[in-house]
Length: 533
Image (cartoon, rainbow, N blue to C red; front, side, top):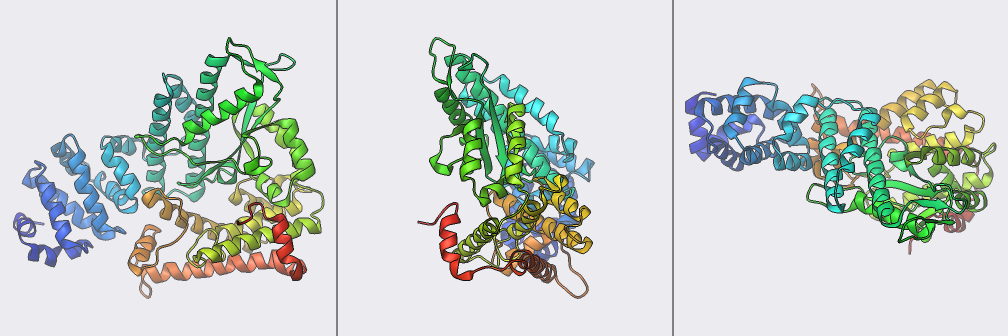
């Protein structure tokens, strides 16, 4: 772009309307104002020409050029040194395109970068590379140890979450890392923050009430189990985290001047830890903590003793709870206590024989999810609970694990992709079924990530309009082909993959077992873990 054309585009709305659509821009007048704003940040004309040349090359390749340009305008406006930023983009031609790609793919990440423009330097240095669980755990826990009060604990937890989420998203969006890498990194981050929050809560309660001891005088212990996506190392960007807090005993007291019973200490501990995890902060959002999978669900106490939990599952545990515990693992607190609990629970999870009652329970839960989805009116667009969606694949895999886990301990894993591979290696899935399930699951999870990362919302529903659907297809990597548009290719893939998933689910849960459909309403009422009011 030469100087004259640049000046014409800035000065003349008609010239901008004629030229800027070549950059993929739809809202040309708004885009012209963005470009005028960039010119007003003290950037020299030569640097502007270079910047606009890069924009003309990069914007047409993005899913949402208008969003990217608008966020770039805001980014320059928030920068301490806009001239230095423009100089960076001239000197390093690899710096601007990834930034624009993130600006186009996620408004949530854009807002975070605009709030702290210097954080992009760290992103470029880390390049989205994965970090080990041990490193995250050590760094976050060490930093939170230095906090002086509750407010600082929350701020440090949120700051670490925001920084690491940016790194993970950069690896996902820019480097196109595999879904398994992204979900594992998200899970490592949540695990480290849970441990740091628990340690901070323990320090606070111990300073007030002294050290907790059991009735026999031994130090009392607490462990934290994760289920669901966190338990399976497959967390989303906006997932709830499903936790169960277990202690070794509830009989005993603390040894401080303001001593309390062990039951009171642990209840306060859990409530404080959850507050650290979920309380809103100027530094960013926390995690939504869900305790409903604990013994007795919402009616139960926040923390349960290990003996009481064993008794509950042995005498009252239901099929849906066995399915949930397929993904259970220890993420914080005393690991030995949690691992011993899960080891003792394994024979209950993976029974030698799957009874007719177990099968009825699995099918009842599946019907409940489908009925809820239909009530919400989003069956076709919901990538999680819709027909052939993520939940269908997870049901297939967990069903096979419950069916075969007693005889095949190697298939006992909470991670869906790992389970697919191990089930195939043991002969429970054919090679074709393995390939199909792995490809379909990865595609659906990547789609789920693109939906959630845009606004940091817990959504699984695709947009309705063709314009937004096309943007979604482009974010997933679909491009124009000789015979199909990105949107057509994406929709065809989505229909094909979800239909394959449903056919396999029907084969395993319907064709393989007979049922008495007349009893379904009564069965659903008895086995529903969370009946509708």
